[in-house]
Length: 477
Ligand code: ARG
Image (cartoon, protein in one colour):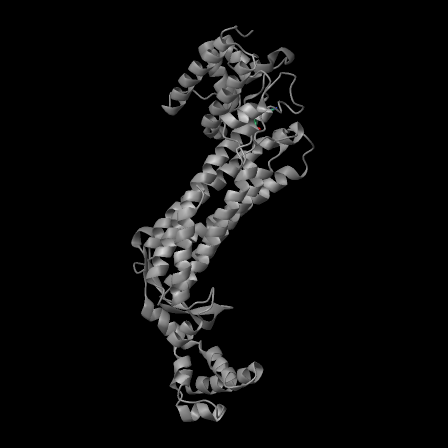
């Protein structure tokens, strides 16, 4: 029997009257979540306090009980924060652990906390509260990564590297411009998080087990206490009790957005790895992000970007896991939902660590402009400029394309760049080619010519950097 002052010590005792045999240790381990969901403790206590305040306000519990709950929860908070709290596998999850300790501390008032509430609406609320905080932290980290990229883009607005399509030299681009492509990606990631945060920040509490509750709860009050409000400051509440306890769309949406952010990191990583290889030699990464080889003394390996590329795979896996978790579930809550936590937690941890490290890693990139420019000279990157030059002299683009193809073929046979062919020779391909052709055949001429919105001309790059800086300064926090 449970003593009145000590509601339950073991999980089975929380609903023991009906049960005639204890759970085996294996089943306890299999069904418990406390060793991973304990990270929700702050959200759990915060949610419980909002619930208790509302119960007291509505006259469902007494002011004295409310006071005891507040005092008891302050102790629990302190115990957990200072590492003194004893987490019990027997008590299954973070919710039962905290409630049992509260009851141990304050007696009957602790037992009244769960009035009009179920762990089903409680856990959904906790995960949402916790995730909301993590989204805000990730938003800040995305800003840090963008700022790091902007700083190096600004320094390298004039640096030329070959732009590739099909990994074949295509046209010269500014290295700053290339980096700004990633700023665009990370800015969309931040935008997506901001957007989905609205759907995370809604209150399930009050749905109880699945059908709502017979107590006169004030859900709006709880929502407002917890900061679950819309842009107009109105309480944001899950409006259907069945959906409230069973919905995990918000976790899937978040993980999808996190997956995209990791995919962007992974693409950047792939480029950094290529650029640092001896064949490219475009950049060097600071030693603190690399490791050596235990056998080859000359090696310096870009381990951090390689791992980031690898970790992207596990986040993609978490997204698949969560989607699969939901696909066959009937309404409303099912224990399957306990499986949402580890993928979600690991997604948050992986993304946060990766963004943190990249904000630093980007600042530690050494750029090698000569190697970049040398590579840009290799692949006839200004061939399009020659075609454009002929178009400006009146040729149709397709005809100009053909003329330049012949010129490139000859240059390849001679092993020289287009700009190294003498004027007389160029004129054999088309008589309208004149001495001014060499302006357009230079890498810098080609770069500066692309001075339209979103183009690679350094003037455009600087405009974009200014725009991004303004945007980041104004970003909603
Ligand atoms: N640990 C559970 C979870 O993570 C809490 C909800 C349990 N509810 C229940 N009816 N068994 O989902």
